[in-house]
Length: 231
Image 1: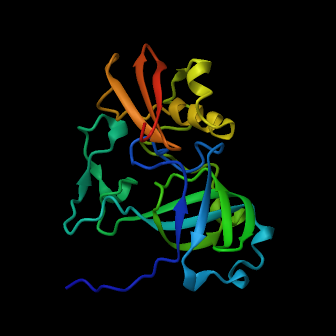
Image 2: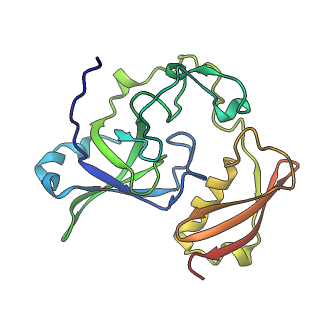
């Protein structure tokens, strides 16, 4: 019988991704997107962050909270391979694994003291959905964590699967100015699943409190509507 261990949630992420669809597929792809790491009350001690100012990046260990399940499969179907090719679960970063745990490297933007929330870490490039529970935070150490010559297997490299974005200024200007660049960068990553790449189909993502609806035609993503949620 498999052993089980208790693990504590120390923080949650707060950002603009309210649903899974549209979240960057890997960390670091959309560095224009800024998120906040808000600690649980038990861990709001500034001493726990002492020395963090000497690092530029962090590892986040977190839970795929929307993918927790009792059973598991030794193979999964990565969307980037079209949704039909099976790969070993331990050879992928699929959220559907025996323990629904994610690992992401993010860039530190700032560490702030909030009068109500205590220390808050602002980070760039997170690929977590809003509200995702975080189990641990560790510093990224370049000499130990970076292997520039490592093989990437079947995973696409950055920029190999992007699209051009056509968003009319009158639509983009509906968003707060500090959110516009991040939205374009998110859309440039082509949020569509690999098995839904036919031109003309209409899609929508929720971003920063807005519903963004778009189509893709000939490698260009066309934003059709941007509607504030609740209107």
